[in-house]
Image: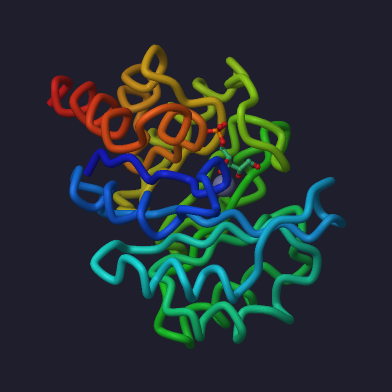
Length: 220
Ligand code: DX5
Ligand code: ZN
């Protein structure tokens, strides 16, 4: 699978439902929601209420919720109630990652783990067989519209090698700084789910989404 997951962080929140519906018409299968608490990252965004609204606006799309918050374990129940398909938690925010992954699975939700750009893959080595997705941050989390950090490309390739070597099937997701210019090399490096905020919502979301998807389809 090679899909684009639009991040609503760059959406027009006065027209969120409308923009999401136009993306579903353009073929969107996943929608990415960025939850920030002003502690783990220097920005505050949205919580369970907006996740719930997103899921109700486009129930046909899978929702992946990216928790950039301290003490994520205390909020899994609240986000689980909004019916996400994947919940991502940062390795850097979790003292007990195994317990957290378990907590997400117990809710019947796919568990994703996230690494900041400078965090090594080795932090995940022991738990790779237990997770459904690994999200590689390719910018420092907190804001949309930043540039892709070049060394993350090699990290995606090494994660893909680990996946092949271990005969594992977790999704490799990449988040931050994706553009029409770099999406193909990121997908070629092994990414399956490519999160894009400004590259989708700056301008006409439906048209941008189609263009990014077309580039991915051309690679197949
Ligand atoms: C950054 C968020 C991203 C963000 C990406 O902390 O996790 O999902 O929306 O935005 P772009 O695609 O504009 O880099
Ligand atoms: Zn994100």
